Length: 302
Image (cartoon, rainbow, N blue to C red; front, side):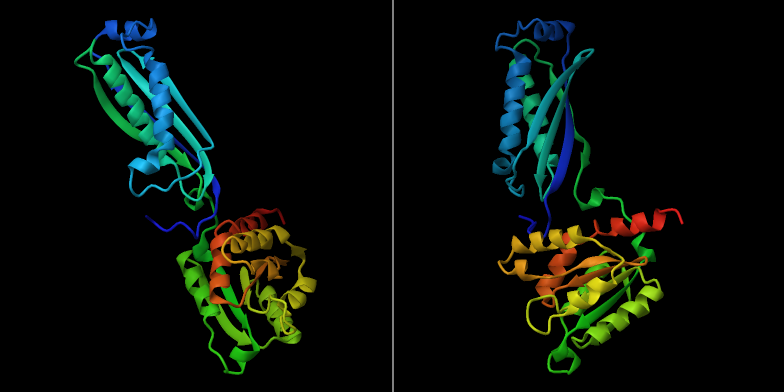
């Protein structure tokens, strides 16, 4: 199965359609008048579709078990055909396209099974996805090719060459996956004056994204949030609330992060943990959704 542990829950909706064609008007009339010998065709098919939706992961090997928050099965008669529409909702890490199509397929097979004694020429014509929504691919965002980022690593030990940087370089690589280029990368000590000097430099240059990596914990030298927060024109607490929630689901100490985020002029400033895992998980949690803040800033009247 595909690893989805890095994904965040979001509302995901899928709608699938199946079409069952009969060969005679008498078959359609029998359905409408509930005279099919095996019973009420639509009632049986709806129940079968609901069971199929819930059991998709038991039948399709690579499908993940997921919570089905809503499912609906609708039937429309169009001349000699029955159109089956199946809609499925979930709030989860992966979509429900296969669940919707599985439900439509089993509903169509149920119609076929119940109608073939009175209409041997009945056939299932197609099963396909009509629409889907939700997840990162569904989110509109800025043209990231135009964005420039600066990554500043805050660490006494790396600055003094007693350790090597991994987290900052991992952030740069992660940004590349969003087509965001890093214009500048530097390592500075855990000193308030150094941190604020970088802020003044790049906020003036109107760099769109400024990342500070490290110094967000609870040790005496972890001062990055304390140096950044007083200079923010607008703090965005929800960004780091989401990052901490995401991290807490994966390890028990994420609650100790004091990371902050906000705007200085038109520059979005984000402070990330100094661990490689923590820094990359924050980006997984926040991007590309956090870029919507830049979109709002860019589109506001001046």
